[in-house]
Length: 375
Image (tube, rainbow, N blue to C red; front, side, top):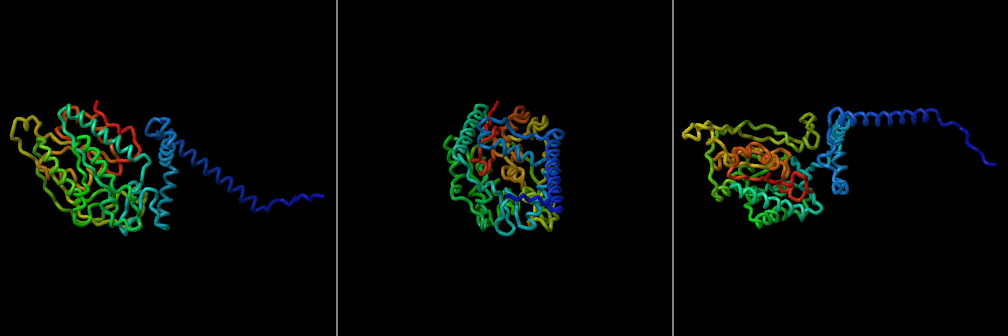
């Protein structure tokens, strides 16, 4: 005869399971409300671009949805606390930042090997070649400048970080491919490699003032070799600031910038300079009508062109006016797309466009913004 266990569950265990269920339901409900509020009330965009079949199949659509949903209020706050706790307990910097030697942080994107990377790089080289031809028909020259990875130039500070050997020739191969299309191009690796001391900021993705200055002088030399007529620019008064801690963008990317400074990764002490353009006296009819001050050079590109006084140093090295149309987060084609659609380009086209691109963006999956075209 089979015996049936009719003993009731232990009362505290029953209460605990009910509390756990209620807690889980409350947590899921809070997440649903938070995400719904972000989408409906805050007009949170779930995808950057239209969900094409290719982007659905390669996982890009779901990745973008997850990325945007992470910005919902509750999710963002939970992630912020998790990142802070992860750093304080495990020295974890999150998915996009890596620790090199003591005091040095690096962007993980520079260490990634992308599927079909060679094909993506070739497509971008072809885009540059087509743009150069279109600009030439309008009497505008194009010069491409490639900014090498921080992990390439500061390799001695990687310590335990591994940079795949397949990336060693990435910048050189792409510049050779662009040059084969007949496009003037400058790889800034050699110039940055000659900087005494550091060329890049330690807790930031960007070059420091010494690195920016070396790049500016190398670029100025190449621009002069092209023979493009230059509009004289202003003189600059340069004043050194007192050395001070500089918060790097990699600390922000790791989600640790909200912590007290003493709890964050060690800040670098940096001496920066202020560049103040001096007023020029009107000396011609063009000056009187405001035409002489318009730059004949337009720089397109990324946040590198907006960091460490790169543009003032380039203008100073050339003795010419330089227009800065770079965009933070512009990646390969973002700044170019925006510039060619702007009144600045249509109303006052330059004689020379300098297109600054990052090495790490050359082989990444293609985006709509990368298909730069003149309208």
